[in-house]
Length: 263
Picture 1 (cartoon, rainbow, N blue to C red):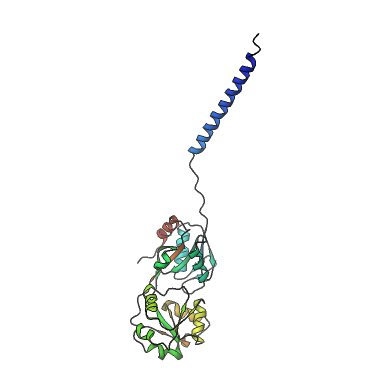
Picture 2 (picture 1 turned 90 degrees about the vertical axis):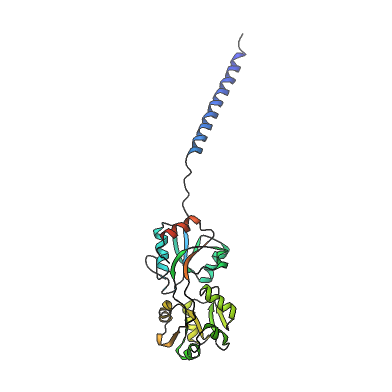
């Protein structure tokens, strides 16, 4: 009798079906692996700003100002996903230093120590040479100097500076070298103008394009202040978009292609 052949045939048939399923699975896997990998959507970059006329002010659509508008247009025209957020200067800088997310700051000077933790785009603007902002009542004390070296040598005058802020590479270097008597603050520029008016310090540095606007925005009359120009003041530096290391190079390249400013 051939009753032993039936189980053998059944086992063989089962093995055949398993082999066919295995071959089909391998073919499907090969097909999946051959398909192009779909690009993951770029997460939005957080573009931080402070209200600092005439450099940057918020609008219904986005940002305006000497650095705010070209930065906003660069992101928009480069088709980089982003959203804007008002953040204090100190907090912005801390976010980039800790590389906590995809964050960018507006209108920043390029400094070697910042390049250790940040990426820069091409310039979006260049400042005019800085002026000394002081009160009209104090103008004679400050304007009698012809050079920064002479000014810094008078230890009776107090300079007000912002913590972590740059006034240009050349001016920063002179401040560190000649160590004028100074007070450091974390306040934004409008509060610094108020501090000068309240005689908490004698003078501060400011770009001339910002001074008139800042005085009015702080609630004072231009006649209350004096803008002192020194012949030895260095040229203004270029301002860039400064981003955390987590912002991909591809995004920086897209922004560079969209920036219209030319040196």
